[in-house]
Image 1 (tube, helix red, strand yellow):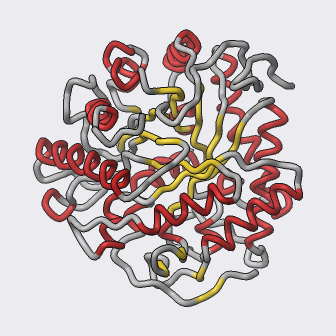
Image 2: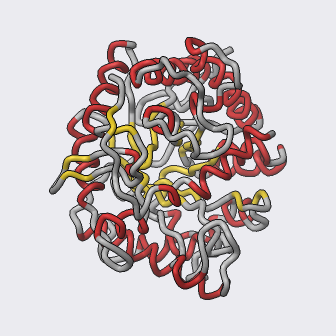
Length: 395
């Protein structure tokens, strides 16, 4: 249970660590399911057609979890497409958190399974990857042992009629590679002799285990860009001064190289660098700068991997309404702030020249408090509707 709770903590607090800091100068050491198709490939457990994948088809993942557990209106809103019909028309994929799969009742999981099947939606699940391996796991077993734990939750969803087309690891390696030992208590793996490449081998072993269980599964990664030095319109440094230096180009080219050597294809990399992060790069509140984001997006695509942008990645204005992770001093105003800033974050990304292969409309922030419906501007689906109706939404 404690290990599962780390998913919520990571989601709520990861971005808070990667802002308003100078950078450091240290350096890093060098039983199968059947049927289905997704773009002529296996759909991960069910033989149903899926909505066409295209640039104007988004991944949608409203905030299912809050500090008190599963949000009360989440399942009802998600499984009633009349509540988000405008957004639904642009959606190819429903994104779920594996902790939601762990916490939800079989009845709720069954409702979602039926909904995605009837509406021909692909399913993506955000997972922990090798960082979920139990304490004391031998280094050469990290991948398989972590995969066994997380596959059990995917298997239960599939058993209830669901399917899984994508998994995306969330911060599975960067914390350990950069030596960030105080990130979340008991979070960091203790393998002092491991190189970056050792962690990558184990993460790919994790993916291959999952693909052995779910044929056709596509696998990718999320890492916060705040961990990395990035070469773009200028040299961007990590956003904390105590991290070992990790150049994104070196990290990602090695990840792709090792994957190919292990006969594995990394499908996607999704960019996690929220509004307060681009404001950090731009010099402060109200001055977002997307140079780091655009550089990573272009580099990922140059390596033959699909680039995705987490396009609804914005908290409320913490300076006015209180620090992240604590109740806002004015909840209604915090709802409005988060909603307005998220639309601004997305539109300014597009204006900066963003050209991701996938837009991920995903939230985990505590405000706005409601999931939907989409006609409520200060709600998760209300934000998503404003984004798809924006003049800057790619058609």
